[in-house]
Image (tube, rainbow, N blue to C red; front, side, top):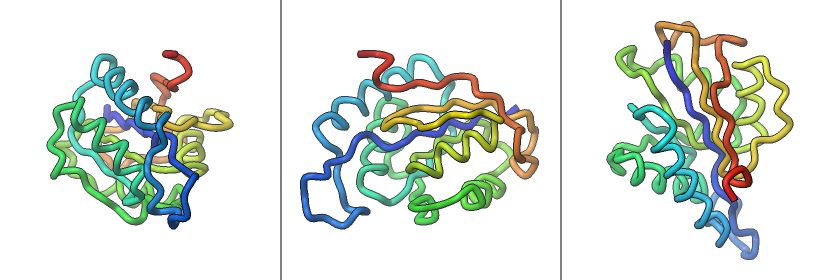
Length: 163
C-alpha cells in the first residue's frame, strides 16, 4: 500500500496586481496553513517526499506544512507541471517515484486537484477548498501501478471543519 496526500494551497491574496503565479497567501491563508499543517502532523503518517507547484501560494503552503512535519525545506521538489495541470501531469510525477517511497504529499491547485482525487478514488467531490487535504490510500505496491479507482479516500479535511 502507498499513501498520497493532496493539499490545495491555502487562500491567496487577490488584492494586488501580481501575475497569478506570484500571488501570496492572504491573511486567512496564513492562519489556515499552520492550523492544517498541525492537523496533518497529528493525524496523518510521516511524509517521505513533498512536491509543490511553483506558484507562491502553493509553495508557501508546502513550506508551512514542511516545518510542522519536520521535513527539510530544501528537499521540497518544485514541479512546474503542477501549475495548471491535469490528471496526466499528476500521473507522470507519481509513476516515476522511487518504489521505496511510501507517502507522497503534493501541493497544487483546483480544479485539477479535485479532479485527480475523484479520478483516483471514484468520488464525487465538487470542490476541495483552499488548504483542504485529501489523504488517500492506494491499493498498489509500486507507484507505476497507479490507475483510475486505485485509491481509497481515508480522510478529507478542510479548515472549516476545525473552526
